[in-house]
Length: 33
Image 1: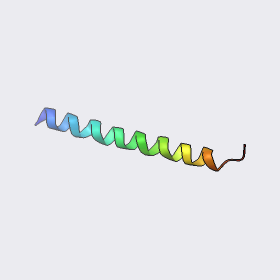
Image 2: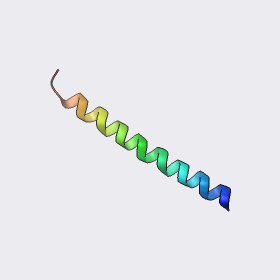
Image 3: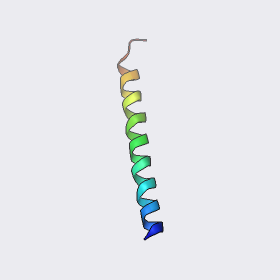
Image 4: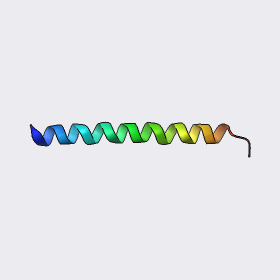
């Protein structure tokens, strides 16, 4: 149970970090220059 919770939290954190990274890349891609 504890290990499962830890894994779930890690997956969620990774997903959030990936979303932020992709949004930043998208905004940078839209900026001129």
